[in-house]
Length: 298
Image 1 (cartoon, helix red, strand yellow):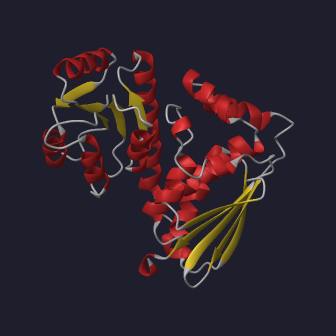
Image 2 (image 1 turned 30 degrees about the vertical axis):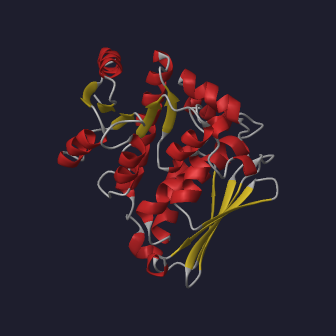
């Protein structure tokens, strides 16, 4: 059972949100402003699994608290969903750029709120599982200079993300970024699942089932993602090429307010901002090059 923290200075809204979430099976604590919330998470940094955060609050506002969380090594992976009345485009971009997983305008429909929370918790769990596996191959990766890989499934994508992350010499920073790019190459590239289709599949809880179905489809079964890793004296360079039709990658490399309420679509922008020193899409977007400078050279 997940532990959630609701941070809002409106007593009625805070209580109503708590009641809604507890009826859905979550354990819920509350705080009336950013400072009160910080005291709770600072005292027990591993206790909470997700935070719902208002923006305009006394003493410490939501964006200040969000930046404080993301700057703290103990807390930076905590999923934060902004739930606020501030709906201007600049407010949305500010929240996402500061590290919010999702941005919702209150009052949000109950089914939308619960779906966003479930999705954010699922994403957090998967990322945590990947991070727990990093370092398994790090000793052998120091000897590697160039390698070529070929894969086609989501499980293989996660396995390869671990290898690439170890080779980058900064695995905790890069593993989720590599996983995002490799999974995109499978689902959107080789299997042709569109952005709109993925949103519908996630909402229906059918995304992984659809991926498995298409992997068995003769139209896609022979498609592979090709990956090349090159280690130079200063950086790890990974090239990922799928066999799909490409996509409008220019729309996804930066945070977009048009997609802020969708259940997905932030992964590339987050990877570019957090995981890599350079992320370059080529041509129609079926090939991407991710570069990571070694830690000593940052």
